[in-house]
Amino acid sequence: MASSFSFEIMQEIGVLSENDKGWRKELNLVSWNDRPAKFDLRDWAPNHEKMGKGITLSNEEFAQLKEIINQM
Amino acid sequence: MASSFSFEIMQEIGVLSENDKGWRKELNLVSWNDRPAKFDLRDWAPNHEKMGKGITLSNEEFAQLKEIINQM
Image 1 (tube, helix red, strand yellow):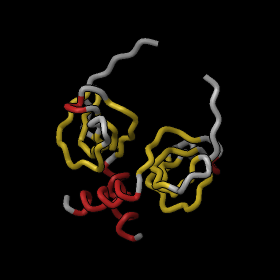
Image 2 (cartoon, rainbow over the protein chains, first blue to last red):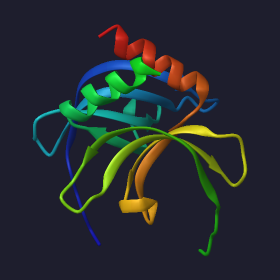
Image 3 (cartoon, each protein chain N blue to C red):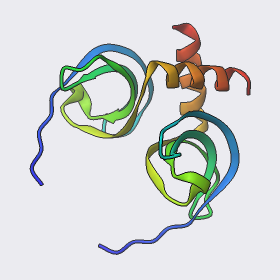
Image 4 (cartoon, one colour):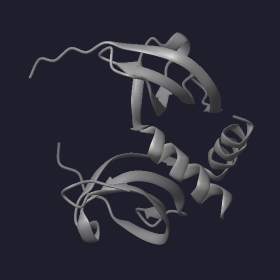
């Protein structure tokens, strides 16, 4: 199946880790297909030239994650 | 390519959201292939019968995520 999509990293919030090959696990605000930006936790190659696996979180999910983490 | 793996949810930490079909985005501690448990942020069908996309975080990555979130 062919597919295409656009994305724009609106804000680089933070880096969780970096491996030997320079791939970094990052928390960003990303707009997919020109939709409103969502929080995005994902692996990226250097300079964001390739993206790896990750998940997006809505504002509500992100707020819930923060609450959960701070109650641990 | 055939593949198989085992997983065990060691601790259910929290639920970020639930959709119409009962799938939930959860933060858990999960052991993959009998390895030490890692933090895991992922979509799950009811009763964890199917898993969706997600990412795993090491202890160090999770600590970094907490620090980043609390500095926002």
